[in-house]
Length: 268
Image 1: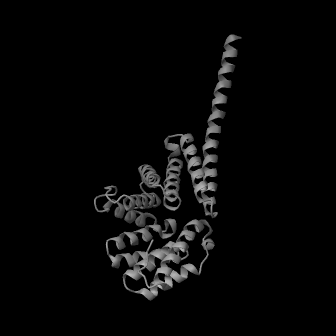
Image 2: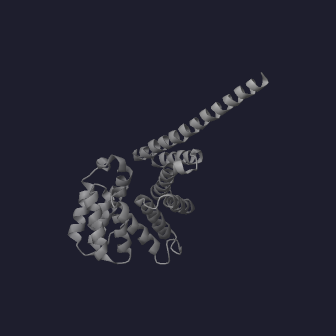
Image 3: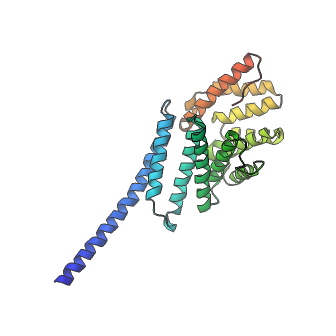
């Protein structure tokens, strides 16, 4: 009788552990889904920061809950990728304190690097690492992050183009254009800016970068046409990029105001 009871208790314990593990699995997936919903909610004007902060919290909870084994490597990589993007976008679009902005970019770099460690064929991970690194360097000019002359950033964007040039609405081409423009390489900058616009003409940042390159090439009327195109669109022309489009529309208004006042435009 004692042995039978012991066996029964052991079986109950094993079953309860199995159910508990199932609950953990469900919990981290639920956290990930909730994080995605919060991140999408960033497109509601005035709710950008709280939405992304909430998304980051949920993604961190998912990260803590997902089993760290071979069977869950893809899920782990996906969570790292979400954390990289969310931390970058929170810092870039919403934060003003320099230390917090730099920390957001650093988190973007670190999480993207972890995603690459798991899957080095994910173009989007290289893209977010490149964007985060470039933004960190822009903010902290003396930083050696990304290599002495930004070679690591260029390599990340080049790798992203090879693997997934269409990620983030042509993002690898968009930021490769910015990179070349910063080094006065307008020949390559115009190629990548045009490719980005070809991939996603209504992701308005692409149009803005193209306008910036055209202005640098002294093709000012064409640059103004690109800026006017931006103002002809509403931010919801791509619903899932309304936050980003809204920021570019605001920047475009300032740029055109400078031009109309016969000033050299402040390109943002």
